[in-house]
Image 1 (cartoon, helix red, strand yellow):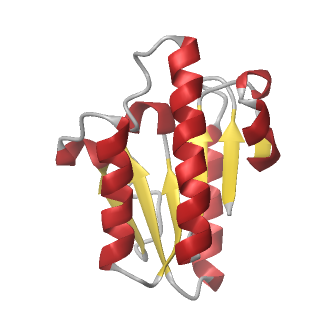
Image 2 (image 1 turned 120 degrees about the vertical axis):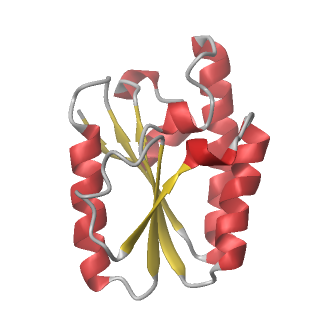
Image 3 (image 1 turned 180 degrees about the vertical axis):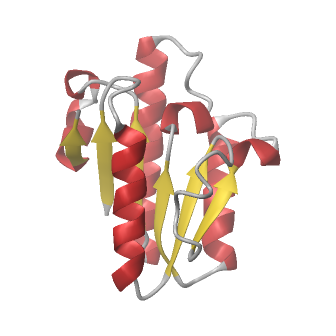
Length: 146
């Protein structure tokens, strides 16, 4: 399953994402991983959630990012959910023009859907886009629009 928390920068997506992760860990049967661009939110997350600073791993393109996520899943078959804060930044889409950004988002979400179905992993994503800018086929995944 894929879930998206959408909204322009500064609208409070990270708080919603952290609250959701902290609530989900209470009933989770597996592990939860939280990927971010820094360790800034370490003390806001439950100590049962594994925080990974993606920038520590020298990822340079969307394909390396997808390989990184697949590697995390392959190393721990008990992963129930992976949370992504600042999704466009950690997938290296931030500096692309709008059209390229949306194409990459669509590509990654398509891969995530396949991975989710095969390995039964939930992907919860915070993306700095207004709902109207989300690709049409991804709007069904939006659970919160700020």
